[in-house]
Image 1 (cartoon, rainbow, N blue to C red):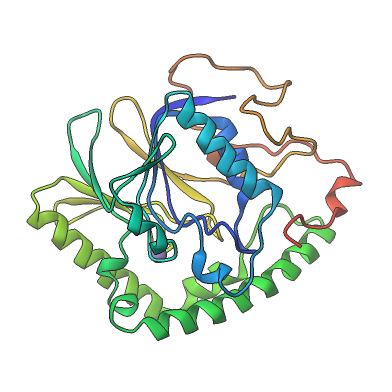
Image 2 (image 1 turned 30 degrees about the horizontal axis):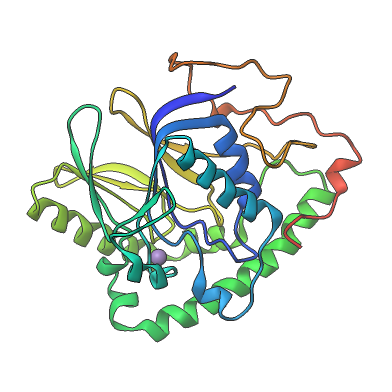
Length: 295
Ligand SMILES: [Mn+2]
């Protein structure tokens, strides 16, 4: 089933890393079509790629899919983050049909005006102590590698769903929580000063839609451990999608078509939001012990 929305907001995909959940992202994009796609930073991880490159077929397919949608009239805007800051040199230009900007203001269907930024400029750690961020990045990558083994074991034990050790560790750390509040606070203050109604950002890998000091604070989360996206419906309503859909067996790699068995929805008929209750395709016994495509 395809759900039509006005806008899809994505951030922190970290293409080029082992942790990137490209297959899950593709299964999300097969179910959500939009008029606009806003990529709010850290889409490609050049920091990690300078150490080692992990580029899968699914990651290629993601890039092709975005280019294809842009070619077919979807408005695609790319706001580079700190991990893809190399692309900030191209602000104001476009790659094919994809525009690159440092930041932007998006007017929702209901008239509210939202700032689009990645957000690292409001993170005191990456701004003033880059080495701390890089060190944290390396430690985080170790957690992620450990997690690949852990999810393989979960799969062998037929435990459903995806569970992230790195995500779990981060949720447990109190200082991480304080960090999120500090970040949110400084972003919201900046938005207030500019008399805008809200902000859509990324960077801290913690998805959210909430009101803070009269500003609507929206964070896309990430496609490294939480697999989250923000969508704007045709009435301007914003929704946080926690994508829990498994990657079905034998899903075609490079097509926008949904699997044949599912009914197609053509227009923007308001169908019930499905991702939370998305039922994975039945998986056969043999496929559940396939090695991870990440490995
Ligand atoms: Mn970032």
